[in-house]
Image (cartoon, rainbow, N blue to C red; front, top):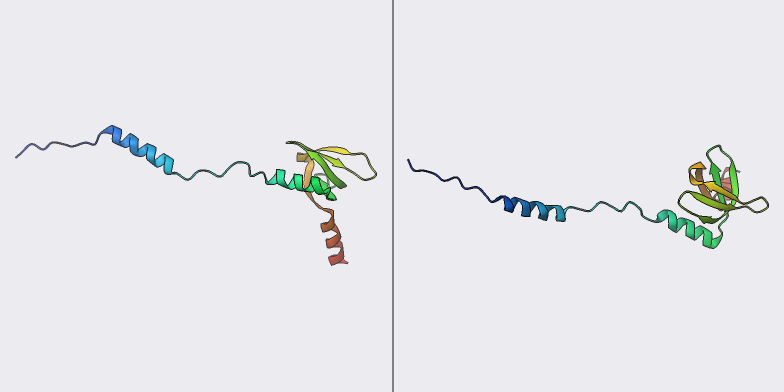
Length: 106
């Protein structure tokens, strides 16, 4: 019998391959898409009449004057303006959608 020599690859080869694989991985999508920012800016610029439905069911009518990360300043027609925390808003939509719903059901 002959002596066989066990051939092992260098450990540095594995490290190089591991780094190459991590570069090829698909990147995760961005955390922030800026869709919220785009929507607010569009509605603010046009002073679009909006309806805000709060968590307690109250509906507010007016338009968005400005916003930040946690709150919205809501300008109302004949009532005082409000600073509303976003976590207190159940949903918001354009006032024209409310009128459209009224026509369909009536």
